[in-house]
Image (tube, rainbow, N blue to C red):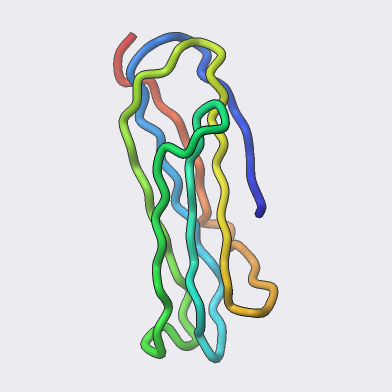
Length: 102
């Protein structure tokens, strides 16, 4: 599971966003998934089941969630796929946090 951790710098309402773009695959099978954890507890996950209409096309999985965080809370972004082969994440993959109000 590739993942990345970051922390809330102040207490407040945060928008947390994860846009995962998996590389194209000639024979698309399985699923592509991303997830967001707060302090080790799953906040949200999203899964795209891949069908033949995704053949040779990148697959994007997008999550955005507003959440109250306390300064120091650890946010973990990650992704997973079950194609049976290694798939790269494209450079358009993005994880972000923005403070909505403190």
